[in-house]
Length: 401
Ligand code: ATP
Ligand code: MG
Image (tube, rainbow, N blue to C red; front, top):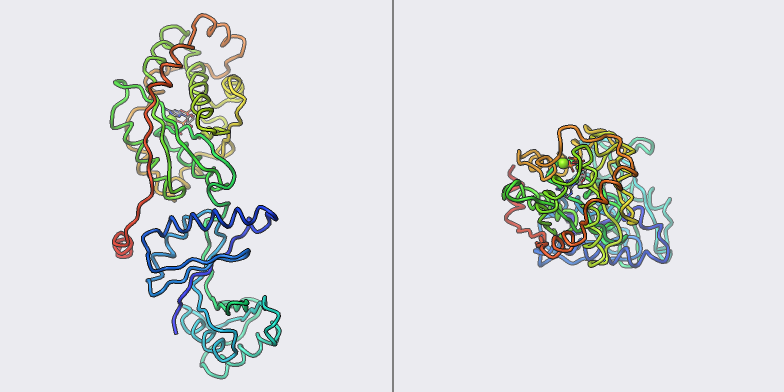
């Protein structure tokens, strides 16, 4: 006997009524993509659970990968047996004796298949009694057990699980629409992208660069961040915007204190053109209230005015330290802190206005017509696509670390 399945629990999406089918289908697709190189496994799904039949594959690396899939509340290794008492007893005993650091246990049976003749409470006693009389050193503790052995009796068989591993939570990527992530090379915007994805949002990224003022390596850093985001979203397109000419115009024509405000407004206008073309309905940014000059209430108000698109700001109320924690946890941080210059830092004045007003910004913008340059810039956008690719050799290697 051994663990031959991974049982996946959905969590929040199970509340979604009629949409549930769509959510489960998307999660299935995302799990499949995540495990694309495991040819032997089989994945099955129903309204409540998903099951990965391991077919002889090593479970550990598969468990590791499942941790990055949004929409999974928790998952466990499982043994599947027939709906038959003797087999269940053996499996429960296996699960208990293979749980680490365990002295006390509790058995929780759920009888989903009401054709099975013994009810849940009675099964708890039957199975518990069996283990107590056949193994040494274990005690029942129904209030605070070291391990809870779950027994789910379903139509297609009984699944026995012990340890619950916490999943990434959230909703499956691709179930709540698409957003255009304004991705810089900093710490914040990749974290914002990750948190949007957690709510089921599919991301495309847009990055503004200004060669030769910003280097190839600065661009590469952004591409590396986008590539890293595929770990949570499988596929990501990055639209690279040649921003030099617009930046120079802004620098030349707009009084210094307002350069940054106007630059952000132009960024949003360019982004809106891309979003329209790609059927994207919102933007996501890494803005956090009060962090820098562009992120005061006045700034946000003045910048936001150019677009009707909703802007998702997952970090708006977070502290920098909280953001850094997430960045490290999702393996973005080391890329984000590479020291290359950003398009904004090159042109931005040392003292941008922290409280820009609408009236002033409109007055300054009246002197310049950005229309043609915006169109020209949009025409020059270059798009790169990344797709997550795994090999089982990488999994083996990471096991050794
Ligand atoms: P980050 O750490 O994400 O760079 P930040 O703290 O440096 O953010 P700002 O420079 O004010 O903050 O940028 C605010 C947001 O504007 C960023 O989080 C990002 O979403 C967007 N942004 C800034 N620069 C660029 C750029 N060159 N390309 C695309 N988006 C950008
Ligand atoms: Mg930045």
